[in-house]
Structures are given as C-alpha cells and as structure tokens.
Image 1 (tube, rainbow, N blue to C red):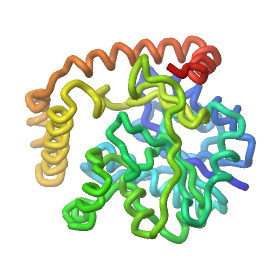
Image 2: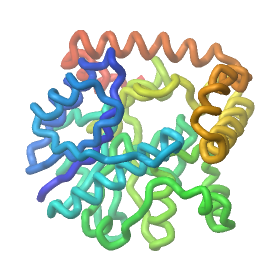
Image 3: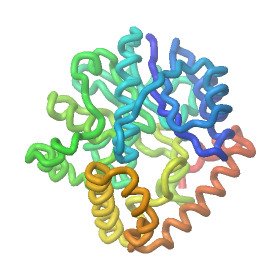
Image 4: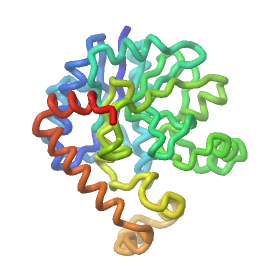
Length: 310
C-alpha cells in the first residue's frame, strides 16, 4: 500500500502552530508508506521551508485566474491527486491544512472498507448543509485505480452548473451547498458508484461544525482560512440564500469585470452582507478559543475531543 495525500497549503500568517500540528500528526499516525503532495498558495516563505523540512513534495501550480476560492482549491487538489496517481500510489486522499489524522490505523481502517462499488470514503458534515452529494475533502481516501480510470472532477464548471442533469442531481439530494467535493459525488453517481461517509463521532455541544472528529480518525478544525460562517447559522434559509446570491454575483463579477475595476468595487463588498452577522461573530469567538486550546496542548485537546460524546 502506498498513500498519496493532496493538500493545498493556504495558511494564515498567525497559523504556524496549526501547520506544525498538521504535519506532525500526519507523520505520527500514518504508518504506511506515504507522500504528501502539496501546493503552496500565497504562502509565507517561512512556511515553505517548514513544508520542505517535513518532506512535503511541493508542486508549483497555477490556480485558475479569477476563480472563486473553492474552485481555485478544487483545481489545485485535482492536479495534486493526478500527481499522486502518476507516482504509483495505490490509494490517494485529501486533507485540509486544518485537518489531520488522530488515530494510528486511520488509513488502513478506512482503506479496508473501500471496494469497486464504493471506491471513496470521506467526511460527511450534515451541519454544513451536506448530503451524500458531497464528499467533504477535509478528509477523503480513494482507490487510486478509480481516480486513474474515472478522472473525476471536484467542482463543476460554470457550464455544467447550468445543465438539467446537474440541477437534478442537487435537487435529488437536497444539496444546497456547492463547494469542493460535490463534483466528486456527481461523478461517482454517474459511474453507478457510491461513497462511504465518515460521520462526526464527537459531540457538538461546543459548536455544531468547528472542532469535529470524524469516524474517530480525522480531526477537522473548520474554516481556518475562510470567514466563520456556516450553513446552520441563524436563520438558515435567509442566510444560505444570501450567500448563494453573493456567490453567483461574485462569480459573474470575476469572470466579466477586469481586475482594476474589481479593486475599485471591493469596498462595496460589505454592503452585500445583509444577513445577520451575530452568528459569525460568535463563531469567531468559539474558533479562537478552540485554536488557543489546540495550539497550547495538542495532545490534551485532541484526547478530550475524541472522548467527548455530548
């Protein structure tokens, strides 16, 4: 067995501790032969050196110009997964910079469940609005043979999003969030296959999404490099509708408007955020608390998170 992990390294300047924990936990808990294929994205030079020192195989990749962040992330992950397959891996997988294994047998146990009819296992986070339409790429393992033969895509193109087949797929699964991974769910279904969900096993009392442990094997901090807004915040129907409208408008603007014009219009961005901001502010407070505890004592924090069932 040989595992090829794909990670896009987009890290905030104050998150060196998170990067260190991510790399150390992969090293500690991954006992099978493995290679991390990484794509630095707007990464400080000091973080480059840490990745190189940890043996990450860095690839200089160019993200699609003007793409939304989840499209940019998906495009880079796809290229990294292709590199892993070409490197002779038997299994490929994805993590985020804020996700990592927390059990020694994580790869072997997940991989043992895979087969021709279900060649992918991934995090499923219902509280992010996800259904079986979206394998969450914060933690995904797949058979390399499936990836090599099917060459799936992770996010639909703008043209694909307008097709009746795509809209029917989302409607059938009641999937409202179209971030990274939904394309993979679509490709699996089109191939007559399914995927195995890795469900949350620790409690949600502190937060419904942040600080999740999945299948007792993968930890995901959550929203480490994006705004702290979630599908379940506040008045869900209002907020999710607002976010979808903003996403469509932003996608159109990035495709049509030249970059100098977008810079001029950028101060108007907050005007579009007309949904209730209080849940986001509360999320930011909880996220800061979780980060502080994780960074101060990773062993204690993660052990407690795995034991929490409330």
